Image (cartoon, rainbow, N blue to C red):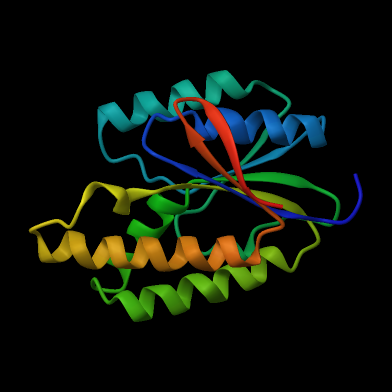
Length: 173
């Protein structure tokens, strides 16, 4: 497979990001890892998680971690899909009492640990700032955090892809 890479995949909700990332991972490994960051808090989210799990199939190993991804047992040569940065950011945002700077620094520290393990990681994230500025202060702060962590991951990435209506638009690498 070559040297480990960081691959960033972004786009709008239901744009096909996760499916693209999963296919990319399977092209690089017969037994990829799925890093799930969501916390199931209602029935609708449970159904979404189950649909993703069924689509992936038995060749995937799933690691569930809503915050501390830097300590996950991911090794050299493995390929992982990190799905998704947006849910992970919201977990940190609320964990840090909506303090954007504290959450961003904690996330960067966790990313350093995760990305330093020699694995290829495909990060899936939402591009939430395209729809205008929210009237809600909390939403504006979260959008700031999301934009900053997206920029950080994209700056570290070897490749970056914008998925629009299921179509890959390569934006880096």
